[in-house]
Length: 131
Image (cartoon, rainbow, N blue to C red):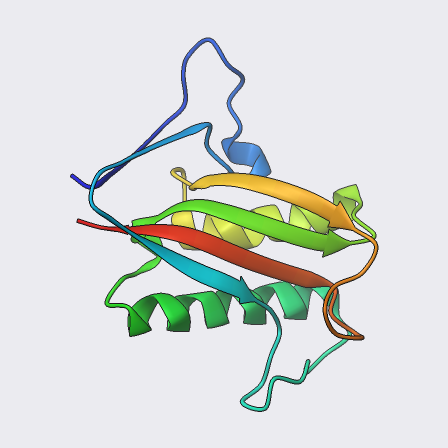
């Protein structure tokens, strides 16, 4: 198996927060650039944070499929959130649980002052593994 996600018993269970502690990988690494709530022209489509999260993860799925991969091949996420708060963390956690269930990839969440374009409130990049 090219990707094994685990959570050591000695550490807290992070799955409720939308991540796992360890991803062991073998095989080819595929890096997916930051995806956000972008339409075909690269413009954001909504100011709604939950809508931006949903569209960013959908765009991530599109990028993964273009490389012959799927969400289950993701070993690591990095999420970037403008004006991070616990409500936003809950929204992201629900989206990750919807996609990955009880085995989310590792994740580093970064609260930032701003992102590349005006109106962007969320961005996600990924490291995936091809077996």
